[in-house]
Amino acid sequence: MGVEAGPQKASAPAKCILFGEHAVVYGEPAVAVALEQRLHVQLRPSKTWSVGGSPLHPDRHPHIVALKTALLDDSIPPMSIHISSDIPRASGLGSSAALSAAVGRAFAALTQQQDFTNEALSTLAHQAEAQAQGGLASPLDTSTSTEGGIVVLSDKKEEFCTWLYTRTLAVPTGERVWEVHSLDLKRDDDIYLVLGNTGIHAPTSAQVALVASALEESPERMQEIKAMGTISRRGLDALKRGDYTAVGHAMSENHVLLRNLGVSSYELEDLIQAALPTSLGVKLTGAGGGGCMVALTRQPKETAEAIELAGGRTLVSRIGNAGAGTD
Ligand code: PMV
Image (tube, rainbow, N blue to C red):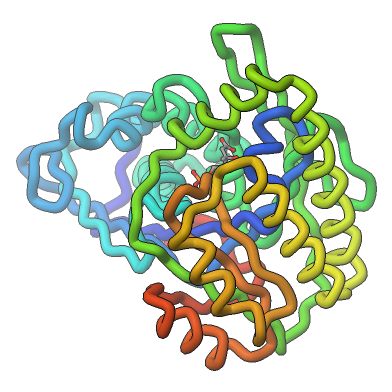
């Protein structure tokens, strides 16, 4: 394996789910977009492997250790890994997926693996994510951070999207299969996403388990999951047309179903209420219970101010940004 001289730099974006969180776990379509906020990594030859000055350790850095095992052999000298990021951690914005995508890109560049495709990167990043989350993770975060733009996941090939690849994951009950697509954006420069962070961390695995037990108790509630799938498709169609008023309506409808399912929180509801008057649509984004909400708006300043007055920390981004790459 040849080694590229000098520091190796790469970065990857945060992601935000516009439609279909939780329902995607049951095969319904979901749509996520790459945000402007990025995580940057820099590798420098060193005496020992380290991350931010601490020794590289499988318990503390499971994603990086998994990628190192998959991509590097013993001919690679130790590296110190420096991470800088404007993605808040554990807030539903995909900071761990961005770490995997950026480190994977940097490792591949380090060893001059020019033929290292996005599919290979997102597969490795997804496996690292699933391993770190105790076995189960959908590839939504890792595919979006790798590919950038707008990513659509479904259990079947979706019309009018560009099909990219099939991702599978072995789980105790068999195999899960997702079809991964990208969607070409009809860009509207007046449209913004404002993310409002509650600052509360609710682990994704606990939120996913909460939905699973609600469905076990009342199997008829699968209708609500199916309804989320219908809304995701409606939102996706609106995105394709560039009809952001309809995109906003679908987001707000999606939120009503998420709230009824029990994955919102008082803090999220406060930020959502504050953002509503200046937004086209508002919902929680990601696993819920805490973390972030997202508002689609043409008035980012007013929306961000309203969310901050209600106690949230905000980030502003356009829709669909570059995926993982070397810097
Ligand atoms: O980890 P988060 O907060 O970005 O949310 C994950 C989205 C879920 O649909 C709840 C889980 C999954 O694996 O897709």
